Image (tube, rainbow, N blue to C red; front, side, top):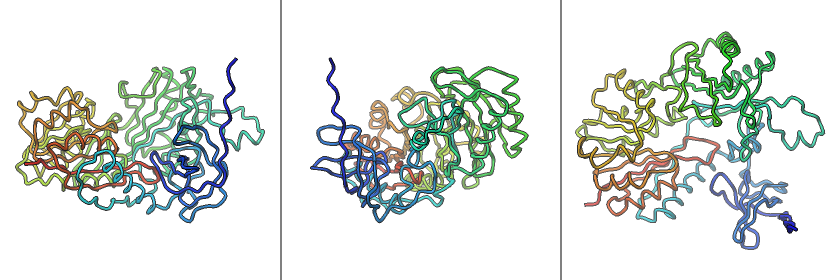
Length: 470
């Protein structure tokens, strides 16, 4: 007979003293650290423990006894349930301070190398409606909030369109309005949802892997161009055409209306054929007079205006005179490569996604840039000693890897190539710090600049300049 698990305790009157990793806040009880989401420094709260270990516990705020002085009212009605913006209850200047400390803590605690003074974080000019890309999920099992469950109401209609609930892959929170992208995307999402209900179309069942309406991606460029990519979970040409025709009629401002039929288990569309219903198969961003073509599979920084600030930092750190050979690793659609090309002799970009490299080449062509070359493939397979021997030893390497950081094989190739200067752009200061520690035998950190791309979240970009030791 199994032993019953002892119920986790309710911790009463705990003071929240600081913010922590992953957007959590923390308090201390009897020398034990307790992590909770949605807390603000100075809050006095009761915490229901949900996980307990020897030195720490995790929980949720069961009751706020007293609000801390820094706590503010969140703008979004879904705050606390959605999970996308864990810091809406903190003033923006407090968010920036937290991110500055996050960068400092990661570099000092993980890298453990000699560091210069960290420059003050560059905040975002727009803290609302700043995202150029949003992805929504349609579901026939929308999430019911605690308030809805407590109401006793019977919810026969469970169709919804919104965001996945953290920790519940088959549940989707039905969103009224998200404040992180222009309200156009809310109107588009709600129109498709209403049209689907009106026409009796099936919403996707994430457990049964069936249903017509599956996901929607909306990309909005700073140029005013709009891309909508509708993903369908069933191959039903007539119904698909009806949905897309209705969207086109209602939203003529969409410049690129595309769709994909995804019959796979997962939602990723990078390996799927994306078809054009009407308009172009791309949108264009603009930066310093350069045009950047962005396709449905392309990576582009999700905060267009702040991306410009980020790339200016990278260009400044690269200290280009016009004579350098530059390698741009993890180049995406070649934004950084093309952005710095006018200041370099030649730029070589490498990226995993072939479609992004195709866009990078087009971006060079449409801007009349002739001193760039681009290569597609896994970084550790492309960037080898043989590749560098063939294409030349870089004077400067700009690296902008995914959250996992650089593969150790890539770090080793960079170390053997010995570029005079490395500019490391990162969306994860922890893995950046790990890689800096590996580079430390040959490279010294000489400048650090955090940049906030994602207000109201705990995410932060950081740019580090590393110079070859002589």
